[in-house]
Image (cartoon, rainbow, N blue to C red):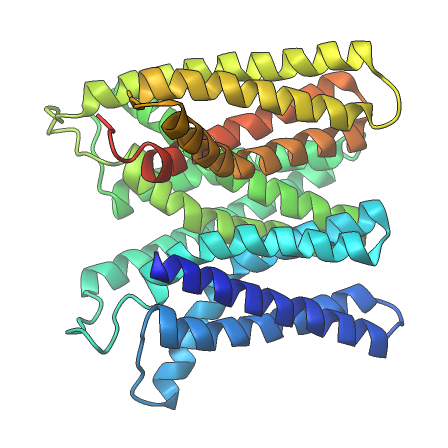
Amino acid sequence: MKITILYTFFALIATAANIGSQDITSQFYTGEYQIFLALFVGTATGLIVKYILDKKFIFKHRVDNLAEDSRVFVLYTITGIVTTVIFWGFEFAFDYYYQSKSFRYLGGIIGLSIGYVIKYQLDKRYVFCNPVLENRNQASPSSLKITFLYTLFALFATAANIASQEVTSRVYIGEYQIFLALFVGTGVGLVIKYILDKKFIFKYKVENLAEDSRTFVLYTVTGIVTTVIFWGLEYTFDYYYQTKTFRYLGGIIGLSIGYLIKYQLDKRFVFNYPIENTSVPTKSNYFKIAYLYTVFAIIATIANIGSQDICIRLYNDHYGIILSLFIGTGIGLIVKYILDKKYIFKHKVKNVAEDTRVFILYTLTGVLTTLIFWGFEYGFDYHFQSKMFRYLGGIIGLSIGYLLKYQLDKRFVFNSQIQ
């Protein structure tokens, strides 16, 4: 609890330093690319302030010399890429849609809040994982070898992805060219990465084609996160800069972030047990929970989208889409809470007060789901101006959000009585 309070407090200080630096920069420089310069200065200021506070008070990490401090800071900066992408994305999107400094800073605060939650886990695991206060152990040669190979294979897959896009773009130059190129590049990169990861990273053996197909399907499912980040950044760079160079730069950044996340997902859910040891104790239970959670997610999604459609039919005036999103989200949340509590986590409450407390926690973990879902639905509606595409965006956003929410709920909401 103490660490949570301190981390939140330091996040607020860093956010204030970030936003304050942006505001000062914007007042001194009002020329072209003002927002980019302000974002850069604010990000750097917030990063340095947060690093000093986290290192000293959160992780109590000591360094022997300036060289080691520099190495730790570089790692800290790398994990900050996720925070930066989320933060810049929210702030730039709010500025673009609302054309207001107040809303722009609001977007920045929302983005930083989400990013800092993710960054804490990354820093704890990869940056400050070997404090001098404890008996430090150097990374094993095997660990370094896996990191090197995974990075190398990621570069191979990225190169294959970008090259496939380039070839597709040259062969086909008609409508929706970028979407076709993205689809082809993603497919080629996915297949190459799967073959290399399976054989050399996880050393995973399969008995037959059916088993290999099942594993590939799971590998593809975890690749949704990578794909969404990659497509989102590449399409955003193409949309704003209108140049092929920046478009591919966005794709490379997106793939880099996505592959970091995908490695953890693959290790945990895809290649999590060798095929020769088929007697995994939790296998049937795992698939039963996965099946039920998927069914409940579909039910909640239908309730959400259905409520939105009814709301739009009854009220289609100004802010109709925002009202429908709000109502649909609320109904879907309640439906999902009741089903998850009873059948997934088998969580029992003693009274209404406890039930209310659990529901509030469940709602808080749903903030991430809501942001992803609203972002996708509103983004699809904005770009395609079609109800069908708007609901498609909502379904994609809910699918991604529910995957993340399950882990949050298991860890923070229903953690006392998980079966």
